[in-house]
Image (cartoon, rainbow, N blue to C red):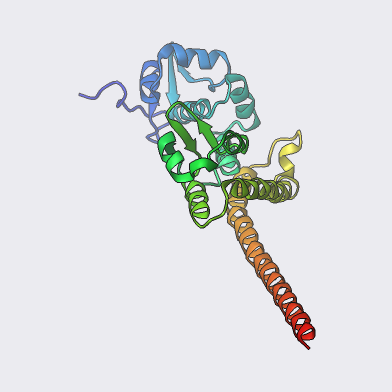
Length: 267
């Protein structure tokens, strides 16, 4: 004996599943009231009518799953209606969701870490002042609470601790962190503008995207993302090579001058 949700009906003889309203709601994990509300808001395409019975197909179920995913992403029902209006087929909407996911997907995979006040005092000693604490918070990486602080990145926290252990004052580490943040924000803006202007320009137009364009843009974004990190990493390494060699050459020059001055004084 098949349950209601497992019942199968041939719509046109091709074996496609069809659902009554109660069956469709159960398959989608929503109430029939919610389903009817979506119908009223034009979020769901009309069913096939057979007498007084309304039959819904796989396309309706796919649309309900798209709506659920968009709601989970924080979209409003009005925004969902507009998005669905931009591409009536379930595939078009799904492709737009995939494009959005590719654009806003996190770049970092940092693990937060919580450190209590006692451990912080043991690690940083008298360098843990109101000023250094305020600077840490101002940079946006640290959130304080009664028990201690939560740092957004265990790697950054470990690097800070290691630098202080090597004798670099905490205030100096935080100043370097602040200046680095300013520069990496500028780098991020360069690549954001590149993607915005050279790849995603079509999204700014009023006209809907051509069929398949969202999927093509998604694939392009996924290819470009690692390239941005590669360019940044390679250029940083090359810049460090240039600066370190220049600094070392300057140090050798100064030492040579001091030695020559010493020899001249002795002579």
